[in-house]
Length: 231
Image 1 (tube, one colour):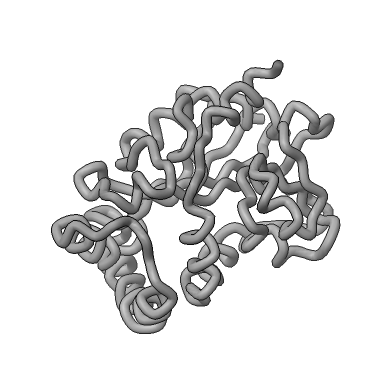
Image 2: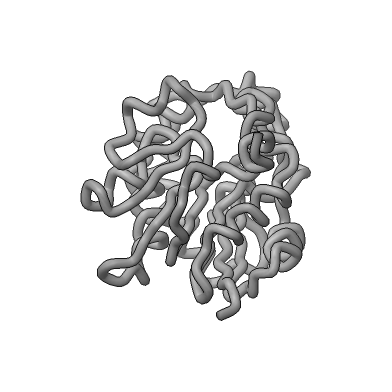
């Protein structure tokens, strides 16, 4: 059994209900897709690692993205070619992106090294993960998170894999304080459609303005990072 498969099998994601709720976060999802796709050039090979329900992979033209996902319940929702083990992938990629995935993997540094091997020289890896361990709450437990991150940890695992970090910032300034309040209130870890829509339409656009003002250097609910494999 490959190391990638062994690592992936340690994921015990049980937050499919939260994942479905996040489909209502139009601004949030559109913003992340724009970040992933903004520098994609025609003919590039792309891998969505941990594609989930296909929220981002499905936005690309059919057949232009490979998707890696291990949850059998989510596989039918992905419209792109899908693989349950990255060792099945014979080719290498110009771009690999992974959104809210590494926190579900116990040995996250090992899987980043596997992704490094799947990149072409000069290829890019884009990573988006939840931030700040002090706001780890019942929601994280509900969806099977091992940890939350800071910028230093994200940069560390990318650099230890052999990548050159080109961009690493906090993301969603206001989300940090909403998450902190959520923890203090002792919520049960679930989210509702109404709360997602309110946050996405009202709070999130303001939060992104704060991200621009602070240049993502102060605080945020997530860490967003990009790295390149040396040529």
